[in-house]
Image 1 (cartoon, rainbow, N blue to C red):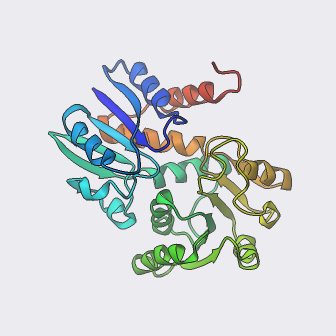
Image 2 (cartoon, helix red, strand yellow):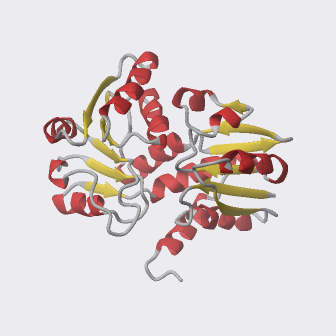
Length: 282
């Protein structure tokens, strides 16, 4: 049985290590690999044609989470609402899409901070593919308010308008990254801050916002699973912080259950990730 994760870039992904450890622990004859699928040209549809014939399932990361949808045969309701897919099951040549990003985030936040999402004031930095899934999951989980700070405010507003259609009780607000006054105001209200841009993925990346805008009473969660400059700055300011490893783990475990109909060996997967991300790992 063959599984994969696709993205552009993809070389940083730890998903193969996590899933292969799970397959081995359960004695399954399965393998999981990473495949670089370019954003431009026909790379995505060409991959999907092959996947129908050769794979049992695959994960999707940046930048294909929304672009993949027109090529799928079926998607879950939560994927339809968010227009985001990160998990595809292949059944008799049909591609069935779902999203486990929201589940992964919620479990990771509970684990890192002991924080439930219900009635929380949440601020998101960025408005990429993962944010669509997270915003609808947060709203469905009963968040009191969702604010999005993004480079282009129009994109944030468009997403929040969709959220309001389905969840009118959720208070929504937005700001442009360049508007530090409004951004600072939205951040000051937040109990949970989610950093969802790709800034920080590479060594030497700047911070997406001025760290002085982060309120010390908030919990800071970075969806990137390396130690970003903003995460370091948030910790130095006294915020409770977490990197994205927990989200990677729990969304991966949820994908595993969807594909195999078996309970994922979460602790085995966690230890594989910790070993792979250790500074002393080979």
